[in-house]
Image (cartoon, rainbow, N blue to C red; front, side, top):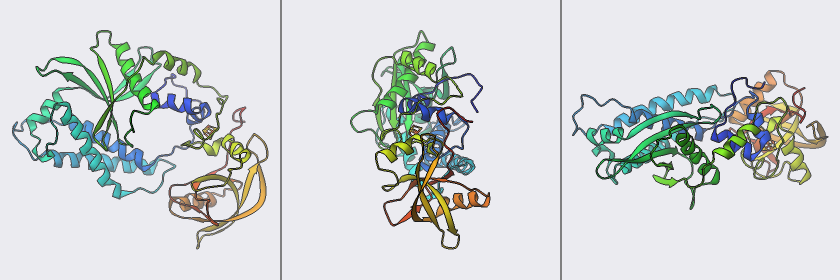
Length: 384
Ligand code: SF4
């Protein structure tokens, strides 16, 4: 069903549209959502930093130290538990990895290091951060986790941090948009899509605030505590063009199948016939580790968690199947097994989509990270 609220475009939706318009369209159809550990970890770290920046320190002595580690961990733990619950409520999720909590702690520390650096402090052990020093950081916070929207409501984004840049005398010299990133740090320079995302925040701020001081936008990579400037021209004109091209419609937008779109991360393959025909035509269907496929289940042995499946290829461009007679044994485990058994228990019949299965072996493996979904491609003409 097409969403009915007013159409607005965020940088991540814009990136999705640029990668493949069909991917963007599918992401708006209310299909079952997918999440992963990296996203949950990132959100918990973000939220804990935002909490720390808003923590009420009244009544504590300015020289008090030895408080930040404990407070930081209490806030992170609370956000971690919230994220865990949301993760399990998301229909498509892998196994939760509790052991990743230590990585979240490391990323949180990386973010704190960058905040300290913003007030000119480097290399200070966190137990030595005083209440006075943290209050100084808080005094430079203009906004935390704010929604940025153009006046016409058409472009939007979620801003992590808006900080004041000040000179040695404490005078405001500009605004700094700091976007926390818990993913892999850039090599050499920001990826183009991240650069554009940050410039979109910058340019929305500038368009909403005619008297704004100079605005700088940076990606703050918590893994290495490194800050990366977004540089380049104003992106709003291009963003408005993308806004016009992404109006809600019942007719699917065009697909752009290929290695950089379907071969990367597309969460919507179970509803798209185009990656399948593309793979079949270039003879890479059902090949490689972490490959996708469409199969018919002939028999499932619950005790051994193995199934006998028949490989299918496209009969036409609508995603209808052509069984090939090629039989495979597939071993299911973790969430992959749970998803399959839930479908079988619900009486599912017909083809299945297997996402990111290990197919480079005699017995295919469908593990906790895999999608197991009914194959339900939406043709180019839209839903029947
Ligand atoms: S599978 Fe490929 S063509 Fe289809 S929506 Fe995803 S990226 Fe686009």
